[in-house]
Image: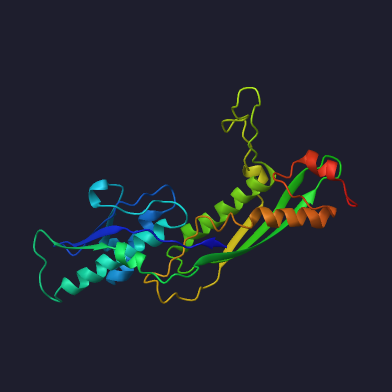
Length: 270
């Protein structure tokens, strides 16, 4: 599991005279599809098609907003956007024209986040892996992986699946490749760049599938989002380590599971 947190955020939504809507929030899209997700969240709350919504992000003039990290970004920003939309809907008069300067509503979720009931909130996942272990070299190769997750409301299935699969691939790196080794003489790290630091590449990634279950709505959460940024990583290395144990009969308690460690550990099947 991975905690589903939320950070205070502010947002503004403007109804434009041409019938479109502009969302302004100091969110950051670091490749997670935040623009797309917030467009869909705003369109859903406004009950309009997504092509009528423009999302502007990444500007500190828009006011404070939560960071893109800890699987909290989309949940925090969507909460603020939804609150601003609700305020805007109350101010709009059906059938009345919108003035040239538009009508803007703003939100600040600081008090709402602080007032959340004090209880645990998590995304959950179960991962399954099949591996092959070379009895001569000790090399471990992942053949296939499957992850099933429960992460609340999934805003964009395409980008959510991409994040979950990406997290699982990162888990392959954690299990088999990534290792920080310090040079005792200089204090620096061996492999300080991607030329020397081993991560999973295309040749290491087999069939990786991810899907999810519909979560039970949280009555304290107005948006129902929990986040998918980290939950794909959680459990991946453990699933691979369990598969290695099943193949060799030996438990590995340290990562990465390097070929030399597999050979030294031995076991009835290696």
